[in-house]
Amino acid sequence: MHACAVAHALLGDAFGMGDPGRCVKIEGNLAPGISSAFTSFVILKLMDIAHDLQTIVAQEKALVFPRFDANRAWEVGAYLHEIGKARGLALAIDVRTFGQPLFFCALDGATPDNVDWARRKGNVVAHFRRSSYAIGLRMQQAGTTLAEKHALPASEYASHGGAFPLTVAGAGVIGSVTVSGLPQRSDHELVVEALCALLEQDYSKLALARA
View 1: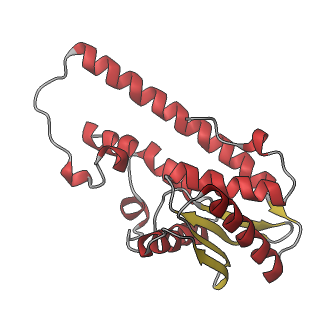
View 2 (view 1 turned 90 degrees about the vertical axis):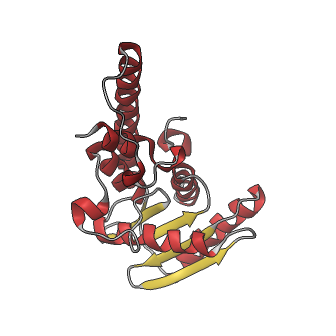
């Protein structure tokens, strides 16, 4: 794989590399010290991704509703609303079963862009039945994108953290709980924190390791 693709997949938008085509080609070989440091960084980053993926599997297995209906959807959305309001977060919050919106709100400071991110992240859960963050991490591991690997357009699918599968015992994944407005890892963890509280799970045992 071209080094530029690896850097893009691992560093991403946080370093202004949202478009792989914008990577600058560096001619020649890197100095040994720089090459060694970069290799070490990549290895550590891949280890972080693997650890997060392992934790997300545990989250998805543990956060299962015994039953779910419109009233429960309102409780989930309202709880996220209260957390966001108390912390002064500018969020879009969406709770839905597949094909049926059940709760939506935008807190002060949220933008139409947040709403669109929530929609596209929710589409990833609908397609893969996994957390959007897990899918995004898998794409980073592979150095690819949803468009390249699965022909899913970025205009409709966003493999960024924040959409979590809504799972019901005996029925499987029936929808998604999504927030948008924070960095993607924080979006994901906010949903997990809320679901842990509502499902009486110990968040400290399911939380992602501190970055």
